[in-house]
Length: 259
Image 1 (cartoon, one colour):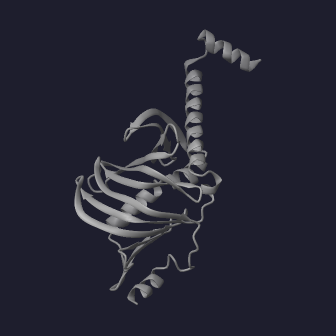
Image 2 (tube, rainbow, N blue to C red):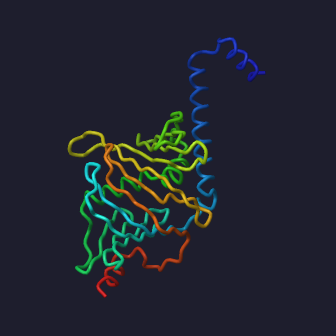
Image 3 (tube, helix red, strand yellow):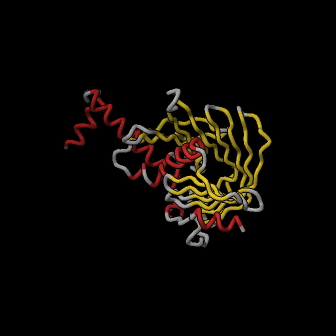
């Protein structure tokens, strides 16, 4: 009976404004959650959610103020959903970078050393605002607010845009292809600790190929405040690959590089 009265009130325009606003907000959140769930299914569903690790091989190019710097390197990357990452650069694998927790270390023939603070901070910001974290952490928090922002274009692709707002007032915005539901971009903002102005970081995803049941973007382009900063092209991808127990141990990596 109560439900019928609410429906009648809505039809006749008698429902109080705050009640209508609440219903609209709930519908918007439900739409956003449904789209994110469709994205998860498009990315592999339970297979993607239960990944133990990922392996990527490709080439990365650097840009400054949107223009190529000429820096091009081969890279080999191992990554786990809990934030561990190992990057090996050049075909000789003689420059190894390992990220674990709040540690950012590099191993070369000269030994091991911490990465510069700005590089470490940049990595941690991207990690903490990644699609992995958005789905595996933020989406599971009942206090996270989901907002459906409507449809927009991303690199000539029609997308559905959803923003996740965390209890700490951080946000992640994801654009999903309206047909395939695969991610087309991820963006977030952060405030510069020195100048206190806002910066926007954005990644765009394209050229998807499926490996082991997981659609994988073979082209990833990064932007900062609208300027392209790097572009990554993959040659190979694999999932749940065998990893040695010391894969993310900087001392083991240093010993191997020295040889």
